[in-house]
Image (cartoon, rainbow, N blue to C red; front, side):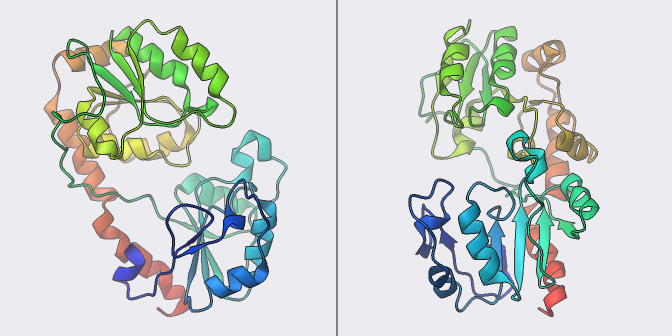
Length: 312
């Protein structure tokens, strides 16, 4: 974790999963309420608190209210992945709370600008990646794939804005196996079953423990989303040297300005030509951009500049 490199004490608090302090009331679908004393105890010796998206989207309003009260007047970073007006069901929700002791950090400049228009100053720090990580050995795949077909990997969950039909259509246009990594969420299960049930190519719907394994097996990465706060496959596909077919969502245009060379999922001709004769120069180009602008090794310096506001 980058904050450890800066000499700060790090404590992890979460509603579920692996953390030093598990407070179920923090979960998105919390089965119980969250007590103020629980949060105060978990954060008692923290010099700085980093809040990941809890105060960004109103999934758990009660927990957000408790955490807001506890954090008032103390140093905190509110890390925003998405904001309420960027999601259809939350468009009438207010902006995130604010306090003079807090720093708001966004993962794209679009959100930074939108917060500023609402009276909240923010800093953009793009997601960072291990950009020199090699691909794992492709001989040890966790799924059976037809070696006679290329593989189109969609490394996303299955929800409406991920645009699974477009990813599947791309696989069909390339006569490829379609591999969807993530589960259906937000009530999308029945629609996903219909979409995959009509597939004219082999379909694999199975996760992996290490996403790099899936990239190793892929010939094409499909990322046809209509909205993303960032979109990690944008950088992962570059790091793992795979061509990317990407949707025209707003933040994709922001990331494209760095100079990436991508394909359109609605125009499979150029991508089919690439699969038939891969252009190593294109892959080298995208990998170099990822190293230059999105490397995990640069993250501590970016955070150090942010922490200067508290004299750290």
